Length: 340
Image (tube, rainbow, N blue to C red; front, side, top):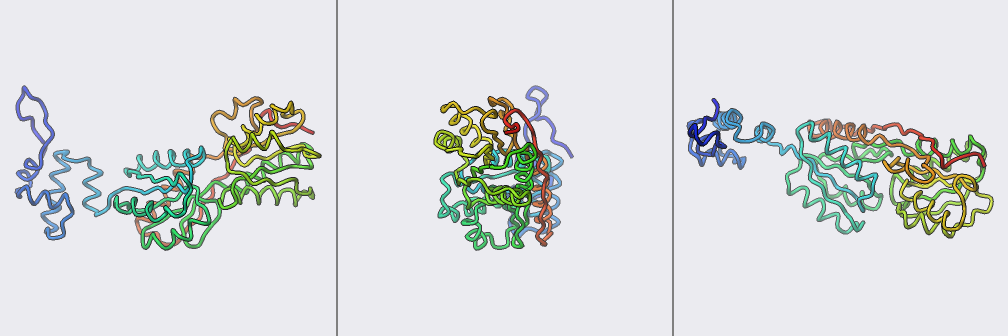
């Protein structure tokens, strides 16, 4: 059965709830009850109404399938902190993968980083009848509270560290740091500072551990460790005030911070890489246009989005056992590093 034009002159018109009712041989109130997922509807009637909706294109087939399966085909995404470049690219990749799989995405960002708002964040997403929750850029301080709130809702955390309580997926942050620091050691650096992200964040901790482990494995003493906040402003202050001493290289926690470091060092007449080498993390689209172009660690956000979506769908469909998937990181060598 298909919808037909009301008249040749007026052309095709979107079918109404009354057209669906006539086609299914029921009242328009019955169609309304099906649309609202009313419990007191015979399954045979419900199936007939949904079939007519499909045939008439009354709704997108994805929505009709969602009604038939009692699922919203919607994923709630909670970004645990300000929307920086890395989390934003993770979100965009997940949205693309979800869209291709027939899922919509609802997003809530804790832009001020306030753990106290976790209650309202989860409540807002849950009231949109999401089928699963995905947490991007998690912090240790907020995951404890989150455990108490999600109940039976399938939840996946985008993090490089495994956690027996969650489905987890992430780019291998620790290995990325090993690649960055290993590159610097390989070209002769022996005093390597690390400008880290906030230590409450799992990614920042994994990168700091990778820096520390690589130095130890090579028998190189730890250089200065400065804890920052991921921003280029912090990187600028670091570059403007940092006393290099014997330090010949800096591993910055992300490319935005590295950009600030470049600016701060340049303001003092310290040249990169002639006076000090610099490595970032993320491979922002602009990193190849920094002066000099930035050596960095590339995260495959498209692969991350696909892997996260696969885990989410598996969890929705009853794959209850927590899994942990890691996406490899990649070293990109450009002009900001050279032998000391």
